[in-house]
Length: 166
Image (spheres, rainbow, N blue to C red):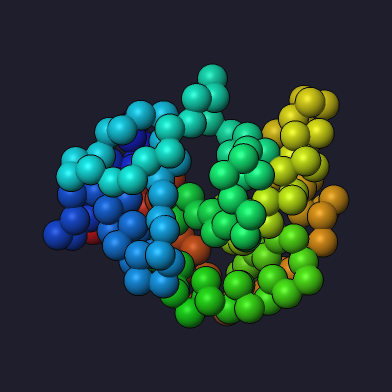
């Protein structure tokens, strides 16, 4: 992208992250942004991650330190997931430790619910030099729910992706 995607302006919002924060605040009481520093203006509630390089698996490995209920994790550059989709993912969590969406082609590991008890499995993977979140879903009870609307999972990876939604 050439710049920090989380700080890209979106419509009337100072950033795509502010847009996502406002949307998620409609269905969750406590929304936090995981980031390397407190870079958002106006301020957002940030959980500073002090990992050398960003790794979602490291975030998941630390869930048990702060939470005892399932946590919804979504990448800031995937801000258009429907609130109804998130609610359905939660309902499908049931007796599983992870609940993720599939769009017919991909399982989206950075858009789903993770029970803090998967932290131990994530820690073990990291100890063995493995970083892929997909390994976690292979090792833990996981509900995968199919969604037909692929557009909601658009990931803003390029300037062209960003121009499509601006």
